[in-house]
Amino acid sequence: MVNANAISGKDVFVVLSVAGAYGGLAQLLAGMWAFAERNTFAAVAFTSYGAFWISFVLLVQFFLPETAKASGMLPASHALALYLFCWGFFTLYTWLASFRISVAVNLVFLSLWIAYVLLGLGMLGGGHGTITHSAGYVTIACAVIAWYTAAASVINGTAHRSVIPAVPLTR
Image (cartoon, rainbow, N blue to C red; front, side, top):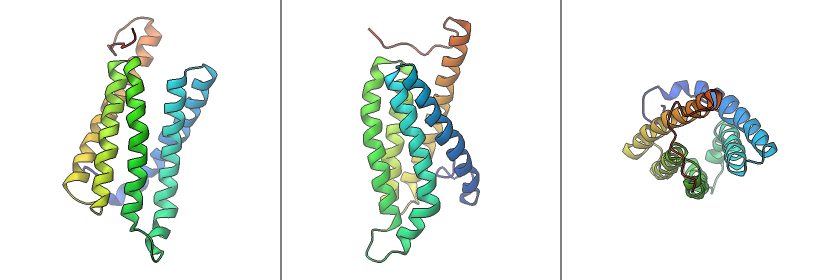
């Protein structure tokens, strides 16, 4: 929402606290439980994105400010662009793997991949501008799709039938 200018950048501390706790710790724990259930896709996805959010909070709070101060280093926005492009690559192959899960999960990873690419491109331009704002809207759409997908999983699992369609893609 900060990237889309829906909320002020001055409110980033609220975003970072939720990112660290819910995006980071909760997803990391979900990934560990998915490993115990032998669900490779969920284990890798949840663990990795939990680590993403924890590392993102650390990066923004501690390391990017130091990178910006260091002489001879890439600008902090370029370092963040590289970081986002690397996560975009990971998300690309996770999206490809999601073709065996469901349409809902596939759309989460497709929109997330697009968001990482746009965010990375936006950071190459200094982090402000049309590309970054577009990325903000894509990430909002991704969040809505992810919440829908989570609701479908929880409600369908509890009801033991398909109440909210996720459209399985398995053969």
